[in-house]
Amino acid sequence: MPLVLVILGRQGSGKGTQAALLAERYGVVHVSTGDMLRAAVAAGTELGLRAKAVMDAGDLVGDDIMIGIVDERLADDDIEAHGVLLDGFPRTTAQADALAEILGGTGPDMAINLDVPIDEVTDRMLARGRDDDTEEAISRRLELYEAETAPLLAWFEERGRLTVIDGLGTEDEVFARLTDVISAI
Ligand code: AMP
Image (cartoon, rainbow, N blue to C red; front, side, top):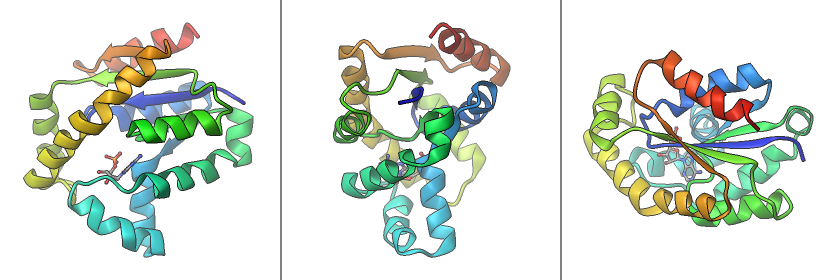
């Protein structure tokens, strides 16, 4: 299996932007499950129709659906050839367990948590004004993040795969911190 990296962080932490920059720098495929879902919503596919209400409410799409989508995507040739940076997946420990199984039991090579405090991400999300960024949806997503996604940090830590990066600062400063740790592996 090629290089598999995971980037974690609260919504609004800048992980999407940094993931795109990192994918370009290292030549790996950037897979954002949020982007995949938004594309499905825009295309009006059956998945999109099912996901839209869940996303608008700030809830998480079901594990089975998400695991199915990612399992299928990871089987594509471009990922086999170039490796992958997963952005937005896994979001729950059930998804992390499934990912480890898909990868043959070893799990991803490294998970990076881009750490930005709650107050700061709330301000950033309100400022970007995306359709699904109502105040209710934002606080719901952050609540869910603490409840469901934060245990993922423990999951990766227990396996010795977690690196925490300070996500405060300019885009360039954060990118430099990220490349420092990734280049080391
Ligand atoms: P994101 O762009 O990563 O913030 O994702 C936007 C929305 O898509 C989230 O609020 C969830 O509703 C849904 N979503 C994306 N990735 C996942 C995932 N791995 N598990 C469950 N829901 C997801």
